[in-house]
Length: 448
Figure 1: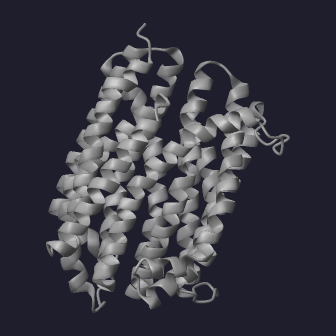
Figure 2 (figure 1 turned 60 degrees about the vertical axis):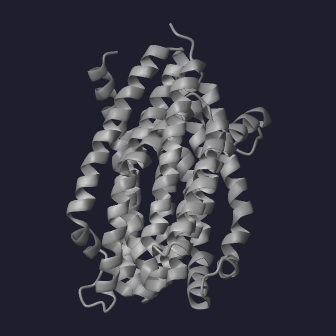
Figure 3 (figure 1 turned 30 degrees about the vertical axis):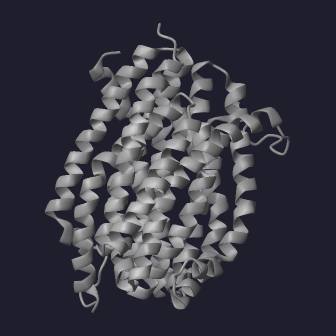
């Protein structure tokens, strides 16, 4: 394929995935916006609670991410039996992981207090998670089914399913946070109920689609029967992916904890700024998913030249997106932040002042954040996950976290210093992961 042909193929696969990720992001953004309207205290507690939830969710998502390249390769090889086996064991592993993670959700208030959060904030976040935490089960199962459908190029449905979940979340938030349409006013608890509702909508839609449109895979027939050989394969590929994602997530989660040490207003500003930055990241994540599928297809065909050209195309696309979002974050920070705040909120000036500085730093990490997730997508396509896990742990835990603490608290740069640590950790990961793909990942594919 020529470079323009690769670009068209990546866009055809990737644009619906970008839309789906943006719709998924809209769910979190809706929570942030509506809770910001409800009160700064509720917003700060939700930021902390959602960070805790996301850490556990992203670790469990490793099994779903493993399903994507394995199904893509099996589909290219024409092995429909393996498509079913991989997806089914991904679902099994997600359910088992959810059962192991739930005690942490239920005891989250104690854990947050041990991590240095104040009593009121920990109690509120813990109450949120005792309800929202049950959404881990549908959320993980949906991730597996999304990976299965994405690998089969059924990305249009993934998009519309996620849009439906985002709409249902917004409606449920409006009803249960503020007490509209005859519902009780539940505030933070209402947001937790809405999250479970939207995740359940997604799961029902994905299951119905898989059963009705793709009956040849018989995903749920004799679902209870174990397949230990494939269970082990998905487990061995998925655990390093989960730990890799956990490394990056804990870097951002630690930044939220550090911002919590600075106070409720800095934490609220962090919650808004990280939500804005996450929105732009969703574009890179969609391109990364497309890269995983395309690389997985090339891996199945053992077509090294095809993979190399595709990698160049998706990397350039990510770079162009980064340049556009850098301009947006630097030129229009206040309008972006104002979307999340009531005009009469007494904390508004302080949150804006902190948030504008944080978005300026966020502009710095657009390039490196996009590059590292594209590299990860390509490496997963060739089922190379162990060394990327080591690279991620080094970059985020041994570089990013210490630098964030030193700049933020030892050198007194506060929130700006904490976020500069994020930039440095992401930069290390981007360089090392890209080097890994171009020197090793391509080498796993014999040239044709």
